[in-house]
Image (cartoon, rainbow, N blue to C red; front, side, top):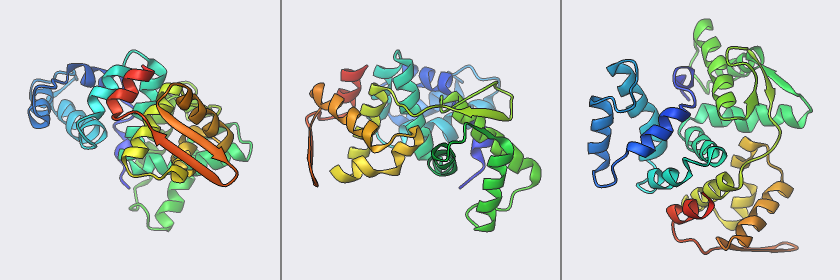
Length: 252
């Protein structure tokens, strides 16, 4: 796990611009070169353009496969779904962000905690240091990482509060229907089994319990994107959509 979250964050505006300007007729390499060398995102400097393009947006949206960018393009005008889809890709690419959202943040919510502070996040990072899960960071870097986690989760609407405040409120459980459909299909693409799709800890990033997951699955079935049936211990999920782009187009 790295400290990258301290200097990159959610980048939602850049992400929307990225999928909008991506040229499907060019190779991934050619597109990345254009974004990097011509600073298509209009970032303050060439070095910032390179950092955002190559070390933030590429791992999130390019490395997973060629269908992610076109799918996100369908969702770009649906702010909630686009945010949820980008949060999934960002937390998939950044293990520290995923671990914080699925671990302490979900646990604090279950315990009834209403807010989180940078101090709490910092103490969690210290526990990771003790377990040798992350490197030993300087106090100043550790603080920036803790603040970066809170700021990023705020931008992804999983926390609420003033941008520069070290104190954030925990948002309630919830994910948009479009975001759920996108994430569910991405998990299916990754080989998740039917039962695994319902039980994956990924849903903890949105604080979803089994009831909410079941409700979302029924809504996907009502849209014709999949067949979903549960009876006792038996479970069946059959996707009728054939691609991530088809899912995104249906829920946009």
